[in-house]
Amino acid sequence: MRPGISLPHKARSFAELPGQSQAPLLLSEIAGASPACAPAPADRPLALYGAGNLGRLARDFLRAVGQDFVFAIDRNARTLAARDDWAGVRILHPDDVAKADRSRARVAVSIVTSAYVPIEHLLLERGFTDIVPFYDLAESFRHLHPLSNGWFAAKFGAHDCADTARVLSAWADDTSRAHHLQFLAWRRLREEWTFMPAPVPDCDRFFIPEVAAVLRDDEILLDGGAHHGSVVEAFLRHAKGRFRHITAIEPDPANRARLAENLQGVLRGDARVTIDDCALWDNNGHALFHAGLDYASQISRTGSMRVETRRIDDLGLAATFIKLHLEGAELAALKGARRTLLDCRPIVAATIYHNDDGIWKTADWLMRTLADYRFLFRNHAWCGTGAVIYAIPQERRS
Image (cartoon, rainbow, N blue to C red):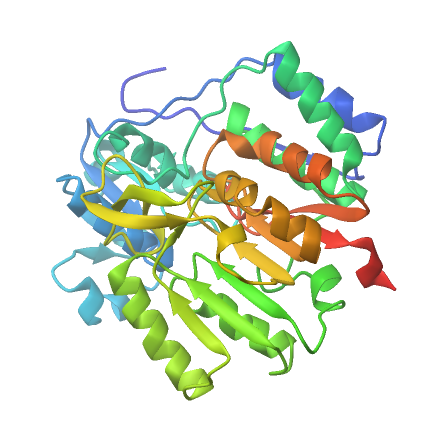
């Protein structure tokens, strides 16, 4: 490969869902292949492609790690250039990027709401030569910044293969097997697998139809990693405003202030809603927390703020719905909720894409801990992100 020329990512499409017999075979393919991918260094001039939510995070990320970029690219460049949040940034339509810049810049694609490979192909056709997913670029700065959505799965050993195969067989439907394999193919090989009968769900994350259909009027929601309150608002829509209590957990001070403001606007001071500033973990104590990173704020050794850590079991909540989006702390939080899970049998919705716990460990722990549950896996975004495990008590279905 010539310097400055990126190797296009592979795509693979399947017409049918993988069943119990086919899923282990596809897992063996993933485990046996040799990936041609690695974190992307910032050793060339950088450009961002996509100026939506992830584009803004990518912009702020690069500034936080002291890395400049020469311009941003977006089809809506003319509109975005007039907005205050992109003030001072050179934003270009793809057609307006100079030929020399197309060959000299490393373009970090900052979009996960659409498949990556078609975007990459489109840019290659337009003369761009060095294209990488933004999260691959972010991996080169993990010593400075804890953003962990771009991790690369290490080679699977025999133990990993056996445990992952067991989890694959335990999913409640073939769609879950398809989404799990799609997740593994990206994380291990950076290949974009799609199963045509199992598209990315067109619904609110954490409220797939299987969850929305079994919500009751007296739910006690624990929203771990509440950020600005979008999940609480989605819950209120799906529950039609009927619930018993909501506890929103958000340790980041800026996020928590925005959360309180948003919930005040929606719920008008409803006493059934409380906000807690602890961080969920498997013990009660304190930990370093890296704040100020918007939805990427998290417990991390790169942080300078100390937060109180709490076990869910010690919050005094009889939660009936536990949602966890904790930037990699989900398994620790679940282990700190064992008694609550067994006593209250809540619905569980937990993200698993921030570290390699998502390969099999989080699912395996839940499957071993919770009897008579239905377990589902859904990808709500591309590039190995947006993956959520759902655990639904079987008695809810009746």
